[in-house]
Amino acid sequence: MAFTLATWNINSVRLRAGLVARLLQEEAPDVLCLQECKSPVDKIPREVFEALGYTHLEAEGQKGYNGVAILSKLPLERVGSMDFASLGHARHVAARLPNGVVVNNFYVPAGGDKPDREVNVKFGQKLDYLTEMRDWFHGDRPERAILVGDLNIAPREDDVWSHKQLLKVVSHTPVEVEHLDETQEAGRWVDITRQDIPEGNLYSWWSYRSPDWDSADKGRRLDHVWATPDIAAAGHGSRILREVRGWEQPSDHAPVFATFDL
Image: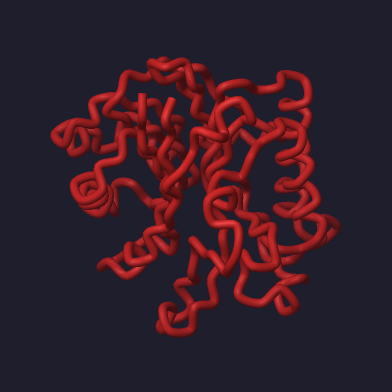
């Protein structure tokens, strides 16, 4: 079974339901994972997506903040959700596809503005969240699984517009990259995007603060598609739809795609 999967931080699924519908119509992924939905599950405009053939939904939500959802043309069997670092946030949901592959959709905390847990509680929460993710994968090593989402870290030097200038900026600090690397290693996750596109600058997020985001191109690759080693070789066709960042009233993230032949 071949299927195409996409991940997108939508920054309000209710506000941008039309953009989600446009993406589904134009690109037609089999599965779309959304983050930062900012909606209780019962308020997600699922009828908009059902009309386009996405009749399956698994989600975790809360009013105004966070929230993750998996939209699918394919049947989904809910696996569950985890509340890492006991934050009480809707940041993870997992579901199984008909071929047995489990899709984990994550929205890792952004971490605030200062990369110092002594003065910034949010940064400490981010590190704790990643630590508990790591420990979970150590204790229950995943198989036939895909992990996607806004992980809020750009790990490689070519995942940011300026490695030197962002070394002390939240999302690219060495301590965050180390925590993400440990999490990835714990599950033996393979970075599918970089497996397909191993070289060159690659971004999925551009700040709203930059009105000329396209020409300035000060981006970061915060959104990821990983897979366990037993299915990683089946992943291909990775791409980031940069043009979506330029749609009217867009999210500040662009969707990331990959196809799996399983």
